[in-house]
Length: 440
Image (tube, rainbow, N blue to C red):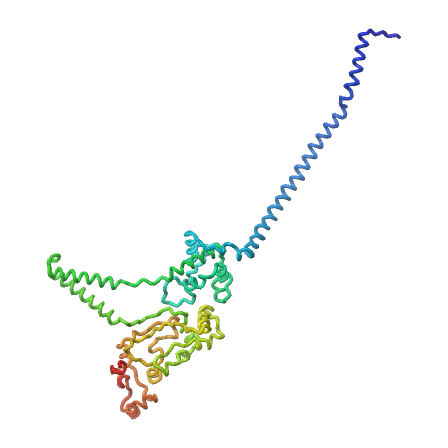
């Protein structure tokens, strides 16, 4: 069957065929588009979301956070702090600090006086080291003494004695001290300042002096008013004031004049804290072992360092004072320097007194004049050493005529006592009240 096409229709068909060849390669297949959309959606949504949320979330959140918080914190907190404290502090700049502000010196003072609490505890230095004069024996060195000792040393030297003391006594006292390097530096700064401050002296009691001044003023005013008659019309008031104030002024002047030059209760601080209670009482050391000239000389004498070293050549630590005070004795002996003890009992130059006469001939024990020395940590003057005190002793003390000394020099009295003519002889009976016996 023959088909006939017109020329216009042939042109239209050729155009369609030509366009189909050009457009077909550029158009994607329906299957490929579908696969691409599905696969990409699944892979992107599922795979990426799962990998990102689960794997990355777990690794990042748990592994990295744990590693960072645990490992870094431990290494930083423990290792670095320990290394810093152990290895860096001795050579650190902290111990080399020499200039301090007013606030730092104030904090050092508060630390020294125990006014700052460190971990619910306070380090109270003044609890052991006196900052003012005391009339009782403190076994520990005072604040001025330790401040002078460490004045030319650095804070690191002080830290060793505070935190790691060597002596048994200091280990017991400094046990549990928790001080940082900054605290020790500030304490050392205040100790340097304390060298200039010094030990506080006790203020004198001015009660009697004040009363004496008031009484003197009233006495003068009443005397003037009695003569001029301006204030009190009744003259009896003036006489009462003059009488009372006159009696008080006379009494004060008389008592103080009698006590002038006497030193009852005198107890100076010695360069070394020596305790008679420990040596004579606890250790039962005979008084004549140290004061060996009492029986043969006018004075009892102060024992030299060689006598002390008879014991302290081996004994270097005391149960109360530790090694500090004994080290002073040893140091003075090795340096061939005498210890400058302060004499307590001292009579005026116009009075003659002999220990030999009283100890050997009179056989008087030490307690008769010096009190219970075996119970004294800090020695003090017991009697007032007045002439009346000496005379009262001579009136009441019997002479031991059986003593070889009195047999020789007072043979008549000895024979009378042996024959029964007399029962006793007092010291006043052999010249104990004669002025020339003591004043010549």
